[in-house]
Image (cartoon, rainbow, N blue to C red; front, side, top):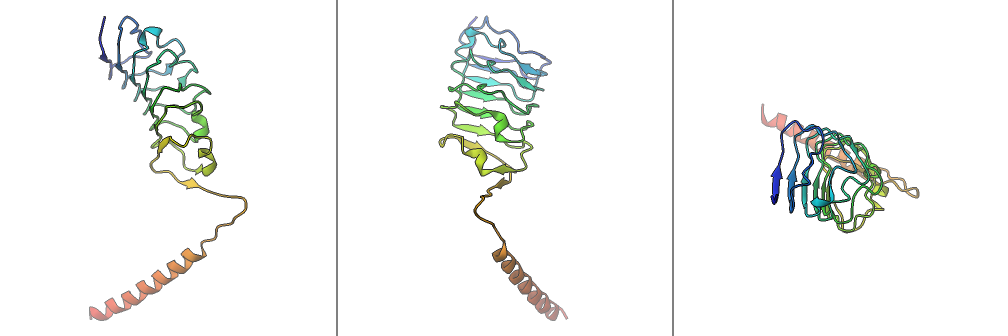
Length: 191
């Protein structure tokens, strides 16, 4: 069978379906199902032409190290809206260029294991419970990688310096003095 796009989105699939009989598949959408794990044998060698894989909005908690090994043309992988907390070392293959991990349960960059990512250009991490990231978290990542973060606070502490907010306090006091003067003027205006 020769189909290039297949959508099985918004069904009740609990495992990755066997689509090995479909040759030349380029786009597979499995989003909105009930898949909980992606195992090493989930994708067969016949899917080596697959470029786009959508696994968003499932209930995935586990991805095995070799889960995407046979997908040698895979450029786009969407795992957003799942329940992932950690990914195994060497789980990602160097040919993936765009990775979506929004709305999962990652607490830091180390739990994602972003090593051996030669081609990865964009990674989306919005809305993960990463309340605090350190600058050190980014040191091992390649310079060409663009990380998309929203609603994150990044902490940059260094051992040799202490950061005091004396300047900010002076500015705050000056702003309060200005506001108080304006309040006095406003009350005079509205007699």
